[in-house]
Length: 397
Ligand code: LMR
Image (cartoon, rainbow, N blue to C red; front, side):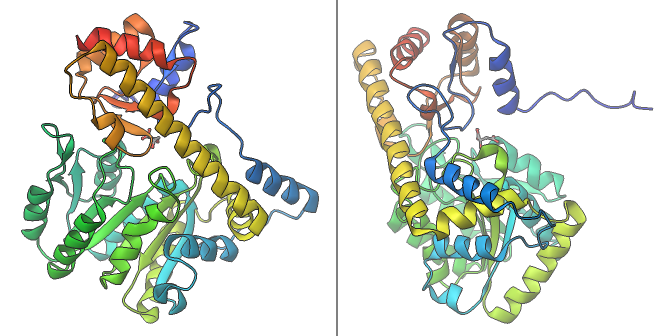
């Protein structure tokens, strides 16, 4: 019955995460997947999350299905987080928000919605982008193209080429943008570049789709929400899929949301209806436990304050590791341009290492990076950063 099935080649990120679990070497280093590890190499359980869960357990409430669109408290907390509670788009009810299964669930629901309601639209993603974007949108039946983004020569953005490509797209083309902490490069647009980009998106009547998976890991929780606010202020209609996996360290709980910012409340109501229809056809409704965590941590002032402090601490630890890695590599590779480790933001840096160099790091030193050369700085700690730098310098010489 199933002999005609192709073997699955494996996912470029998740397969590595499985391989490292099986690696018996005690000094292996996981700098592949986008997960925040603390200085002891553990995935932290944030105190605010622990307290929210304790409250839920103590209440001992029943476990009904959530509505298709998710819990109202979680949905409105997401809108306030992304745009500010007093934002005109929130107050006027022109944002349709669903709680989703992580932001991946949101991306997929949005992709299916586009395939159904914008059947002629292609989607343009940055070159490069998160490995799963292409698979996800192609899986929904959309044609996926790229726009220029990362400039290997400067370690920055090919901004003029990016704008030029977007300026030539047909109206209603979908443009996927990383709201902050670009994955995989760590190279973000400046605020001035976002403003220029908004003007092009508006002028060409394009449909932006923001992916905000690393809020708080760039410059701060509020600061990292600059892009959705800039797009809303420019009068654009757009999608935004956001995740709490990294910012609340709740990866397996699948806490995420999808919002569609619409021109007015009537269109938002229709959009919400069709997004609900899409969810019902896919997985019916989102998880109850995830809604409880998000609504409580964002809605309770004490838990919220604890969360904000934890996010700052995680961001600062990554910045410290960036500085340490940069210093160690600079000492070992004099004359080499390595400033990108300091200027890039979020969990990732794009090292420029070739697949062969990445393979050597894994095989000889037990250091796991993605084969694109992306390193997850959040996997470094005071116990492994020197060994990692030593090995990287060895393969880069
Ligand atoms: C990553 O890019 O490593 C993360 O977003 C995890 C994933 O699902 O790929």
